[in-house]
Length: 104
Image 1 (tube, rainbow, N blue to C red):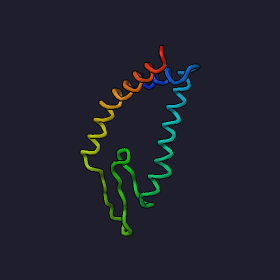
Image 2: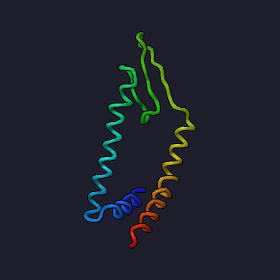
Image 3: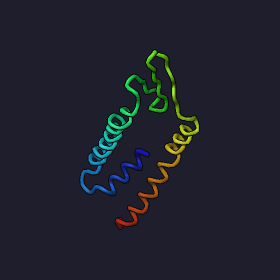
Image 4: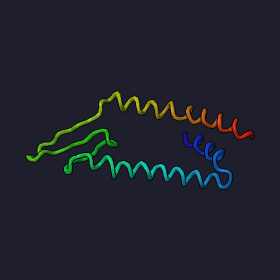
């Protein structure tokens, strides 16, 4: 996926494509971190811990007893499958049509 992102960056950016692609990727990562910090974290109770990349949340009630909430495993397995096997072909298709359109 990283290689296809940089190829796509060279198609979209005409001058200094490598550096502009790096800045765009860093901006995208920063956007995800801001969304997590400002939107997802305040939704949890004040006394809670997020484990395993946000899929497991451990909360405590007023007596100090822990409760653990997690997403079903099939959701995590589906997400991992899509990230491994679907992102790269989708980016290849986008690059194909973008290169076809730019008449190189």
